[in-house]
Image (cartoon, rainbow, N blue to C red):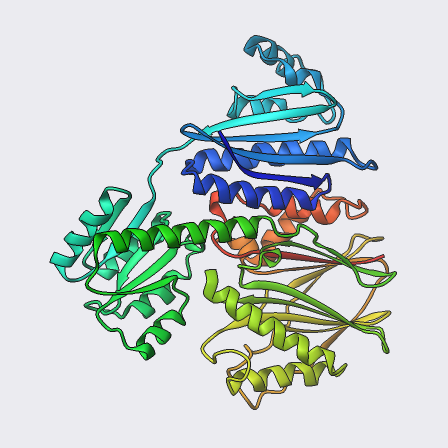
Length: 495
């Protein structure tokens, strides 16, 4: 047995999102089935929610340990909260008696849910710490590789090279390959540069839309060794470029290197900070949940305060696309917006300068599309410019009144003569402002509008509760394997 992941977390609500991302990454890596991944996400969300409630007001911590075992993976949550005797019963009959005795147990750790999905779980006390353990087994231990090559003899040769080490899915038609990739988890893509119907760079740009392939390794093969060709191909976000003809030892070594690099990058991502709360001043604070916390996402949130005027600027941006290409554009855009907002408090000028820069290709490529929701916050009012984002929602904490704001303006970069002007809101006090990217509702319900989705999730939530932002986020979480699109929830809180 070897340890894949070991990390301590404070028992706070943002830890749930971090743990979900981490287990999704590692269970996918270990070839655990989608059903088992979804069930694990459901059970651990319930278990951790109860841990946090038990430790409320205390300095609670927990440790997540992921171990590689023969044929699968072991997950362990170690915590120092109150020990729950009923959860420790190992006999199936005794567990059923507790579940069916009709007694309501507040904070009962989700015993019925855990026992239903993982009847072989273990829960025990060791020293002063509780251990909750789940074991899952791999559906397949072999790495999945898609090979695309329109020359049949070369296709068969490379397929034979790779088949000893990997599960290889070989295609001489790029459209059949794209259909396969849209429906399956794949670890590595080897693709010829010049195909029958499409150049590889165009194909790669299309599959970058698939969130489930955000960590796929990509190797392009070609007889063209020209430096300009290599630079142009590398620019779409590939991991390696190899020149034909290929030797067996060389291609196997390159595949192994790319896969190891991707695995290491995924681990670094999973160890990123789970801090999602920023206090802007005594009145304003923001909580961010979801993809904007991930550096490999096309979503990001940016805040900046001008100390002289005490004006707060807040931006939520969603770059179209997925994976490395969207994340790269998001990072460029974030840096450019930060440079603009540092040098002006004129809200309209800031957004119009951004539009000019995009139109002229100064900050990002003109073919990159993004939506943006921007705010300028002062003591008793908010100015906003919504460019293609869903409606945002204002909730009066005292009255519970809910207002939707759906004014939108044209996408940035399409019209150099358009003048962006902010709308203004007179504010109640105190309030919540809820903003979200379209992936939040599309991951769960593609048939509901964004407004319908978020209003439904607000039902039966107490806006007076300090847990309101986290409870709303938890209600918006889809099953782990259904998280297709980047999704971000931003909650602005005025005390």
